[in-house]
Amino acid sequence: MYIIPSFQNPTGISYSNEKRKEILALAEKYNAYIIEDDYVSGLDFENMDFKPIKSLDKSDRVIFLKSFSKIFMPGLRLGFMVVPSGLKGYIIEAKHATDISTSGLIQRAFDLYIRKGMWDEHFKLMFDIYKERYYKTIKALESFLPQNVQFHKPGGGLNIWLDLPSSCLVSSLLKAASAENIVFAPGRIFYSSTPTKLNNIRLSFAAVHTGEIERGIKKLSELISYFDRSKSLTGNVPIL
Image (cartoon, rainbow, N blue to C red; front, side):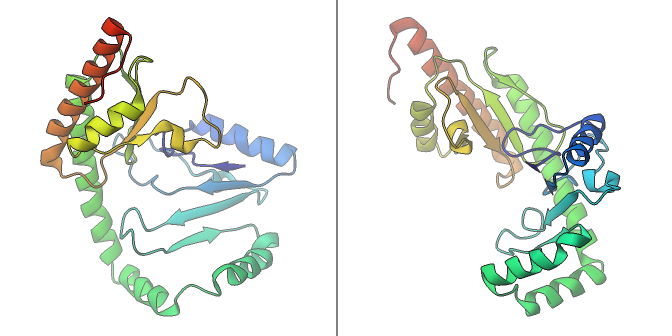
């Protein structure tokens, strides 16, 4: 099973600690492995205190993945794995066959960065920045979104998942929003096959300056209302 139990991308949903235990019990029952992608669990802005499934793993069922890219530097394709002892040799062979090896120089440099305490300082800085953006985004959504748009407050992470009214065509909304320098990800791109009634979008606040969030959310909300109202009145969605 491949899962992102904390602040899942794209929905922002997290599993409760009870559900994490149940998932681990299923893996033990069916002699299966869990790939736990823990890419942003540290961005817990509401102190939800989720426990990594790996921390509960007594039977070596969890392959734990952690990336530094989202917090430190997107261009630094560096992370780590904690793997069951019986799989270590196979994973090393697969890694070597895939890309020969990760740069030793980059690894040594980042190791030094961590040992000197620079990572801790950087993480605190980025945590505070992302936390401010998160609450600014939530406040703007609560203030400006039409009442028939639903969203879940994830409590952390980098994404917000919106459920739009069925009359608001996402493809047309995307074009109109892009013209206003507002970018979001249509929900359909996260599916291997697109459900016929899918009408979601993912907002990410990771790369948006705090001062631009309110304006962007307000304008996006206006566009959603415009397309929704036009559809309900005329039966057609206008192209702006």
